[in-house]
Length: 214
Image 1 (cartoon, rainbow, N blue to C red):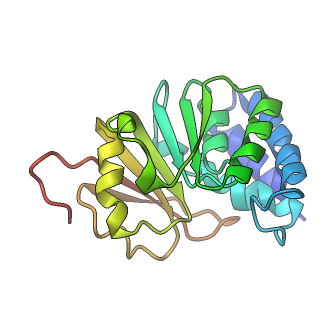
Image 2 (cartoon, one colour; image 1 turned 180 degrees about the vertical axis):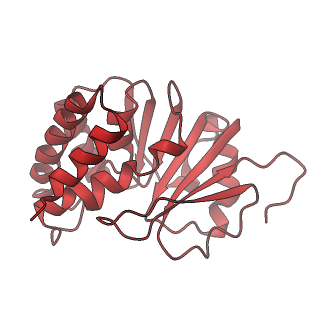
């Protein structure tokens, strides 16, 4: 029987043969810290088996790496929860500046503890609802990632305002894409994996001023 950790290890080894040990070491640390903090604060479903975290959360977060080049980019992880997908992306792309946003203070406190254990630099946390995020952040982020959260139409303009001129949204989706059609300039990539199932990565580029959203 193939263990879920081995599935992640295989993926990492194939994609990053020169860094696989370094990357897996960080994922092992993250796995341990996430389990520890999840006992205190509900960051991910407590019904999720520890072995399934390797694929259900970690592998799922990095299936899109072939479609991205995030070096030195400013990334906002919207509704980060337990640091997903932001922390896995930081493990893969250590040069990014990562901002983890959640409206729940207790979740952000737990994420801060995880970040400290991982000894990351250029990682920042924000406690706020998206709609209440200060306008000083407008135009700041190169990429906004959002996993397993439906994008309501009322947040569309706010998200676009937060992006830099060449920025884009990265939405993690399965079969339901009903919230995707509201955006123009979208590209949908199939990144299905046997251990994860149907998975699509939707890249939505910022719409120029004067253009209407879809």
